[in-house]
Length: 185
Length: 263
Image 1: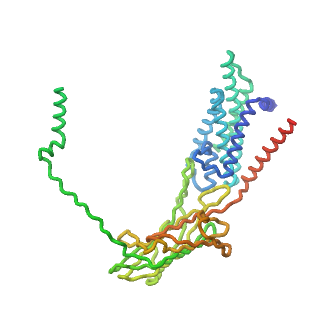
Image 2: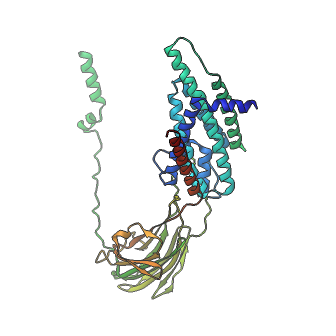
Image 3: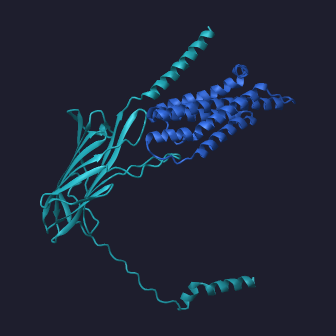
């Protein structure tokens, strides 16, 4: 019941909408580029999310052994969460960039996974992508709200932070843990 | 100033140039430069042709016919070699390694008009046979083979077949191929399924026979020839297309709904 209220509050929070719009916008562009075969670009966005990149590569070469270990998945995911959240201190600019690029990365990997990977790998990748997207959107909400508070502090003398910033952070953290657990098992 | 002069003097004394000047150095033996020997290959060709048929996206057959001549006045042992390209993987940071154990991807039988079937030794990517030509003699060589084709680039909208087969004739001792009197003596006939496109198809005249495209062209041959299978065909995506459509329908629905609110 309380979580429902928190979610309803967050839904009305403008930074949540902005964060979701940036991530999903990046995802939309990434998916379209991947679907239209523009993924093999010199900038390998897809490898920012190694869990999905591994599923994508394994789909091409079934039966091969992945070179990356699970600790790397955790390191990457955690580092990205830190950038999205901590980027808020630079008045949210880093958060905005990181959210967009991560959305793009997730979107770019999905078409080939859907097309070539097996049912198990596809379902795991989709679940992970959803959890990861939720984590990044909530942490991005928190980061952007933090950035606006810092901007507010620069204009005024008081540092005000919205209660929903904490809620977004806690929810983001929960989704982050779930996505890391998904990567590990 | 005096110390500088001393330093320069010391440097001169220790320099090898000083020793040469004093005539103490040993006389350097003269370096003899061997003049390159101009020698043409004793192997020559009269007539060569290559007939390739790509049966489907995974299998192709080829037939290579060559009339070879020994232009020297002594018996000439020579090597006939067929090699295929081994697959390469695009370099991605997290790309899994290629499986090391692979199935045999090609086979070849080499027949000499004079000696009959030749003994072919093959490894994973090369098949080799030895033969010989008597002084100023000739022979007719026939290579019948097949090669497995694989899709190495996975795109959503295209299936690519990329393979490379090379043919080589050379004297056993001297690694030097025969020279042809003309550069366009290798006549290639290449046929492939209708649904495929050769990457250089626009430059060739294409005939269509029984569901296969047929192209004929001449190539240069200097004792070796590399045949590229660069084919692709369009593919229609399945699952990713559904998600793609869903995303666009969602986007259009959101736009229409939001636009409706502003009326």
